Image (cartoon, rainbow, N blue to C red; front, top):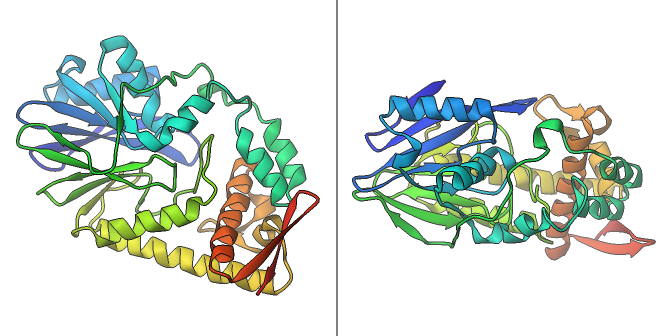
Length: 330
């Protein structure tokens, strides 16, 4: 268990994850004079719970001392341990209101990625869509607590912990309801998966994605870029220096992606699948076919999201033929 004391009021407990390539999540403990809260207490599992209890004990806390749990978004590795403790200990969980459709969809839609299957078909990736549709849930994802939160968080909401004020900023993109938490007066930003120090967050990785997730995400990045120069406290990876600077780097990354995709459309690659196959992915610059299926899916859908932005900007034209979106340069 790794515990990092960031300020007198803020600490981070690194919790384990059962994921290849993403092995931990940072749970933040915020402690005011009248209330202590957790932010993103991880993936529901006995190992997570043991690690979390050890960290709280080192801080002189127990579940009974936690007034509420704030979650940046509804993904399993942030939300499910919170829901477990809501049921077991009665600790209320709060989640960004925009994530409500995806929470409800867990109980109404079948399959691991029900909406993404149709989006892949529109992207010209029918074989990939069939493979995704056939994907079973991972063993560690089965029978996961995924109930509704006790309350919803709206943009600008403030939580007064007694001498410590937390302000919520709606930052849609990674999910529709993603929220970052600013520690007012301490120049700290708990960024969840919206801004990460080394990797580029996937867009619209949720059960009910929005139609234009990248526009939302870029707008949310600009919001962080315009905030006071707060220190970056991400959900994954090392605590950083400047949240604003990292947000600006991510904006540049997506601007460069838009240019590459526009050039590939101009060269005659008309579908999101063909464009993704012509690009390289990850820091290792791997080809699309070399990625695991789930990462192939996110790559193709990322291209599709960029194409929506280009179409709205008038840089490409879209025509749907036999259910597949084809793009030409304008």
